[in-house]
Length: 146
Image (cartoon, rainbow, N blue to C red; front, side, top):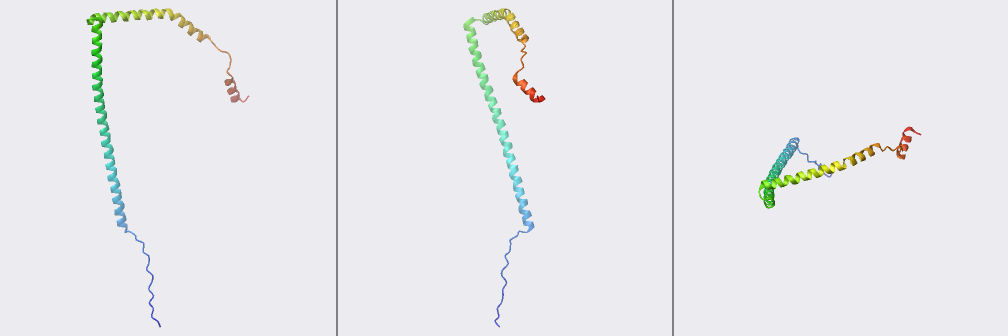
């Protein structure tokens, strides 16, 4: 007969990488991940340093503002003290006299109200309510099953 040649169907080949290539690719991937992690940690460290620098600068700026405000307020106080009393000694004596008068006034109020305060405290200490709240009765009944 007829001379027919049967050719086998081509086998579908699954492309598999050689183990060494896979190992190299995964090693490269790991190295890339490690390098990315290192870069990320460097970025975070730089951000922390920058934040610290900004905080220090903000503190310096705040200190300058406080010093300027303090100087401004001190100047205003000095001008007012000089305008009110003239010399510093006279203003100091006037302030001392006002302070002494206020202290004497407070002591007088204390002596006037001391007995009233004692009476209020004693009345509160001696008030004893002999009624048991209904909520306490219910909770006790629940606990002891009555």
